[in-house]
Length: 218
Image 1 (tube, rainbow, N blue to C red):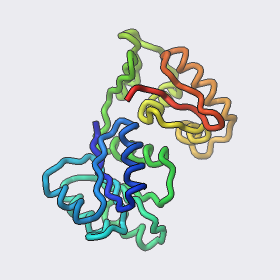
Image 2: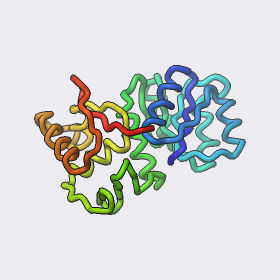
Image 3: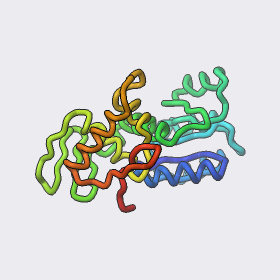
């Protein structure tokens, strides 16, 4: 389970991010100002990724980058500052990504997954009930019996599994799996969801006027 350091001074935003990270299977650790974050780092606690606000009391996020970098912890900046100069400073320092508030949780989770994947911090195996998903091998088993999966079915299953109990819109699923420039009917998603339900027996529920959610016990 990847541990993610959430350094954000807005308590509501911090708690919302942490809640969604927990639901998605991560281990979030919050901090609400720069000096508190530095003290947590100095305690020796290990993190796989930091979500870092720039405008923090005590010590700003740009100043916090160096102690995080020295410990080999990748950074995604989360900030309300959308000016080009601040963005360039963050990225030139070595940050992995830069997300401007407000943002959608799915977008955040997808970007987190991409960074963790680059650093080898994502698990190559996920288990949901009696379903075993092997990422590197792109194989799925149900009670030790292999389930044949088409490439997009597998990718859709992994996306749902990495966002358990999170409602994902059809449009977002289309964008993430078929590409940002994909032009097609959202019915395409419905067909693939139906196949996944049939093959896995997982509780992929319809969310009215939104899309789908993979329900699991947390």
